[in-house]
Amino acid sequence: MQQENKMGVMPVNRLIITMSLPMIVSMLVTALYNIVDSIFVAKIGEKALTAVSLSFPIQNLMIAISTGTGVGINALLSMNLGRKDFKAVGKVASNGLFLAACSSLLFIVFGLLFTPVFFQSQTSDPEIIQYGCEYLQICSIMCFGLFLQITNDRILQATGKTIYTMFTQGTGAVINLILDPIMIFGLLGCPAMGVAGAAWATVIGQIAGMFLSIYFNVTKNHEVKLDVRHFRPHFQTIRSIYAIGVPSIIMASIVSVMNFGMNRILMGFTSTAIAVFGVYIKLNSFVFMPVFGLNNGMIPIVSYNFGAENRLRIKRTIILCILYATGIMTLGFIIFQIFPETLLSFFNASPEMIKIGIPALRIISISFLTAGFGIVSGSVFQALGRGVLSMNVSLIRQLTVLLPAAWLLSKTGNLNLVWLAFPLADVAAVILCTIFLRKTYDKQIRPLPEGKPA
Image (cartoon, rainbow, N blue to C red):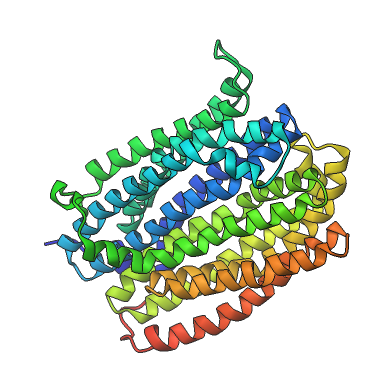
């Protein structure tokens, strides 16, 4: 007899905290090492920081594919756990790992063949291109650590064992933090490698996290039986994973398109504006990562209780997560409004960068006030197998509203107006999320039995 999973019986507020807190901690550590990584790179020079900022669309695309596939794995695993179909659980996990290996091969090919073309499409500055190629080639060719760690972490999350993901992500982040100054500046007998050192520190941390996550799945995750027979592709399982995961992949990949487009728009003003935008992305991760950690805890709870047909627990989970996410984002907004110069000074900011960055951080962070609701709503859609709704919101927000608005506002010649595109896009996203969430609740959640008390 399999014991009832805690996602079906533990009080919801305690369950959310238990599931999410380890991931929030690990994601805060991850956000910290992303920021510290850029702080060290900024000490090389502003062009090095610009090159790393230009690398972000490809790095984000890798994360988009791995986490998007992970959303499909996570939701499908949790639903099958709720139905007590443990054979299907093992099949989903094994095929998920197979997909992670295949995805990493795509970016290895990109790193070997197409990195110079990518940077040449954004800038003609040979120094920025050289820095960018050194950094991105290493991150792409060694990306298997990223893909396999994220997939194994999602399998742990799907069964409620989120405490272990705190260790896997935290270990990788700490290793990165330690190696960054050693490999960038050549300490303790290591040769000074500059931006290449930052890349090596990143991938070594990812590979360490990968090995640890594999170990935890094999030794601690007894609800998931990894069968070597299932590492051969089972197309029905893969189709089910991607039915949930592809909209999430597209949604996250849109960030890469948006970032690439914004870099092109900002280059029309100055490369310093790109550096400021890159710094903003690093800084906002410290605000958004806790919300993503909250969502990673919420998705298996909603999926499990949807599979177990418990309306009360689903409803309470959604309400509490919206409240928590909005509180986190409001705190981030206050910090960005009060301390923008302090935040920029961490990145060795030049006077021009300070001048551009202070209004940029204050204007863009207005969007934080509504972002929490939108992020949680999108995760609810994913948890219920309706990721296409999240995809539609992201498409409209970033490609239909944000980029066209930024391009039009750039025609005024006033850089500060360009940043207004972000809060404008988030207003549109909130309206859409409200409509979609109401329809999803009426169609999928309201018809369920009330279930056990939440």
